[in-house]
Figure 1 (cartoon, rainbow, N blue to C red):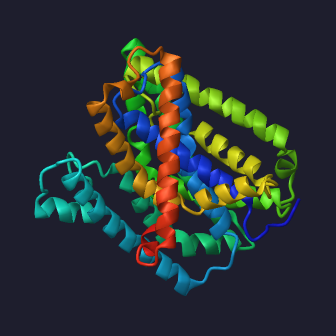
Figure 2: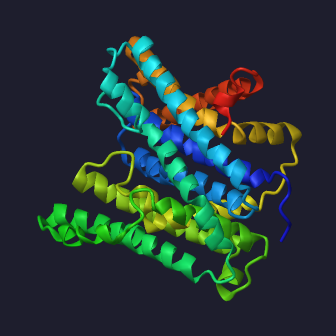
Length: 373
């Protein structure tokens, strides 16, 4: 396999895919006219790979290079400070632009500590909480990954996998059965999550380690029978099977549980893990992009994903306000497919606009730090 270059185009492509999935998912929830149809739910259910793919890319990058403790602590502090600043900026935006009332001091402190006060739409900041959590654990995770004996690492990943991915994959099916046949089988599993000592963000470890392993397999650094069987064709096959699994599961959740656009437990379900890692594996085969203009665009967007994440929600909120003012933006009179295509195009526009704003922000000395992790 080719060796890792200074910047692999495929990793930027994976980050772009992850961030567009974030934008599309939040766009479907937060705008006025996203069609709640079978096709729309099928497409948005596949955005479950959004944040997992970002974490897998980070794992591929961070777990496979030497850990500079000083730089790592500086990066951790930078994430904490950026989270505080962006939370304050978002609160100001919600007050000034969207006209929300001034929050109480308690709500402001609560939000700065990672909370989401009612009515303040700060839920998307959970990502920074998870990023801080994995960065706190990264030195230990790095030591386990670099160890000649990886059995302790497999125990940790196995525990998380069993008590999050496996448990909730079964629970997701049982909840549908319960709703369809008026049983309560899912509650039989309610005590088992307590055995997962790693908390609500523990599944992020699976993506960090999985991303690093996929990168090592791609570069030929892992030689075993399982690694030898992973080929692009096998990755495409596994991606197809896992995507079908996700879509079918979301359809039954939609019918029996009223779940719209997303999938319950979606970020850590077994099919999401498979699809995420296979998408990363396939992306890594794209080492370079031969068209210079497209290459620069992908590099610019791939290096601006943090800014896109921070800016996309305000842009979505503004678009929703425009829909209230201009009903034509609600695509009245269109069929479900036409409305879905129109909404996806609008999500693309918001993604590109957020990317442009983030790219310009990175070029301005006083603002650069706000858009750089």
